[in-house]
Image 1: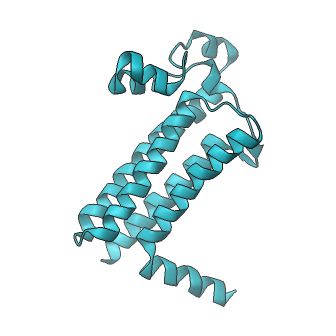
Image 2: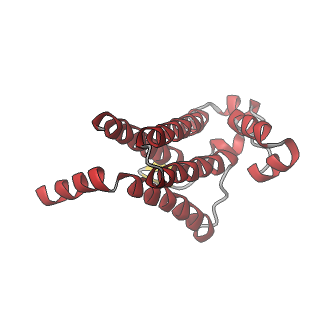
Length: 167
């Protein structure tokens, strides 16, 4: 047990940004693989969550390259916070009643199609408005995708704040 704790402490102290970049990239790759293996259709909010994980990975990689660790860790905090907002919105939509869900009209087409038709900002707004496809629970292993995303974003946020406080 102490060996595992020392391993985790070593990663936290010496390879923090690399572990954030690798884990967030792995999450996106696993989600894409699961879509193809299990023939799942990711809703626009799921796709937006993936983009936030990519932003998080890019923020962590930037932190590995740039010497200003405080600024780069703030980027990781901002990315994690955006992820919390997106996933909490999806969790909220998934907990709505059927009547309330039927009133939503934001996720009427795939995210990339919304970007083509409406532009990036309007596509994000429409996606965050939600829709029936975003309310589907989909695949579940203890938690669904949105809940797992929320948990990972909390871990990234808290660990980055702790890392920032130590430096």
